Length: 165
Image (cartoon, rainbow, N blue to C red; front, side):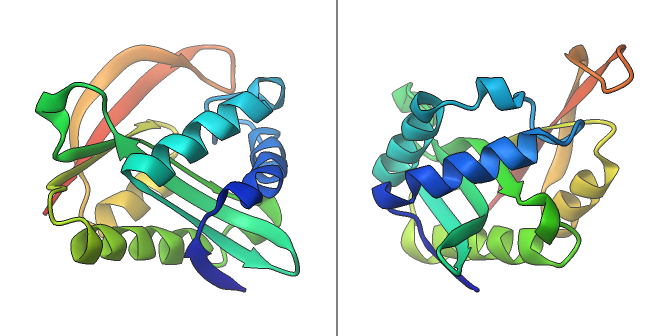
């Protein structure tokens, strides 16, 4: 398996990855029905045009993907947001999330000197993800109380996190 830059040809594999990952409650915010070709195409096109999109590929399958891209207003031209990472359920807990995340941050540091900040949002119950993000240099910067439905039917906070160069 290798980590490489994504291409438009990866869209079907990324779609399959996201559908499999979204089937596990508590990870991605979208349900499998909300993962559409249009959703994948939008993220892929935005990330390829203005940000970063990497995949873990092997045996013709996409096992993980991470993307982020610039926000529309010019005052945020130094920021990459809308960050999403998906690791196929069969490959979670094996270090691929960390590796692809580190590769993305290295890409930003070496190839995108204009980017000074990366943002993400993570549900508060996803403590493993929060710990990973913090170990990579992200800081918790705010809580959006009651923003996201939790797996148990209630609501929980989304945690706003940021990384700065």
